[in-house]
Image 1 (cartoon, rainbow, N blue to C red):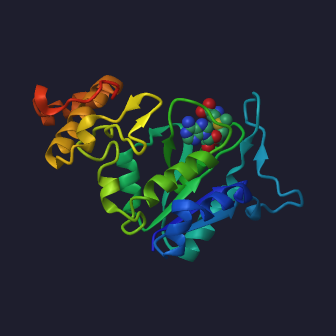
Image 2 (image 1 turned 135 degrees about the horizontal axis):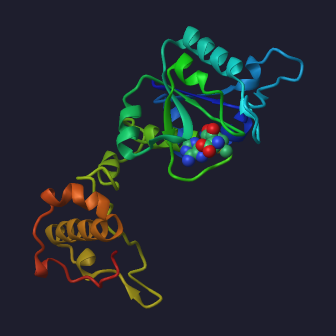
Image 3 (image 1 turned 60 degrees about the horizontal axis):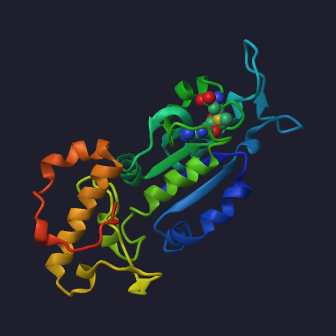
Length: 247
Ligand SMILES: C[S@@+](CC[C@H](N)C(=O)[O-])C[C@H]1O[C@@H](n2cnc3c(N)ncnc32)[C@H](O)[C@@H]1O
């Protein structure tokens, strides 16, 4: 069973979320295990100190290297080698392709930074790969860690009830965004569900979904569209008679 270890100063903050929804179901079904490791358990002083001032001066504090390295060594001695990621705004951007990669690992360890981050030497000593959630700065790596674990765990076989829903998600199918979706009521506050979706014509529904997914990707994410134009099929004007609020 894949093991996801999260090194954090706030295991109690993460614990309730890991018990709920998809992460909870995956663990109950024995399809994944999430281990929350408190960095303070690897301190040696009375005050359980995990941070210190940066050399060279400047504002803020840094996570000290000793508790991090010792926690990693303890985990690897107990469970074997992990693929190790440090959450960091300067890292490689986390994407669906990275989630796919992580979902194929047997053991994954994620370090949650705090304060101004952590002593840079832990990268080399532990072999961390830096992962960023995007070009913004949070106060800690806890939300990124949960995001990364959830994105990977939902890809594990058997975790979601319906495997097709993963295949149809944004970024999975030909790298496109998902098509628009509707549920009942058929008319809500004057807005009607596109006619084609209630026509019972499965081929027409499929064509509509493909067309609106391509269109939405082109408008919202032209960067993704560039990668998929070679796969895009020519538009067929009669394929869809939906109101045009799909992008
Ligand atoms: C306040 S941030 C440190 C920012 C750092 N001084 C910088 O400017 O790059 C504290 C911690 O939050 C986490 N963090 C903040 N923004 C993040 C992001 N965009 N992606 C991943 N982790 C992030 C990291 O673990 C980081 O060590």
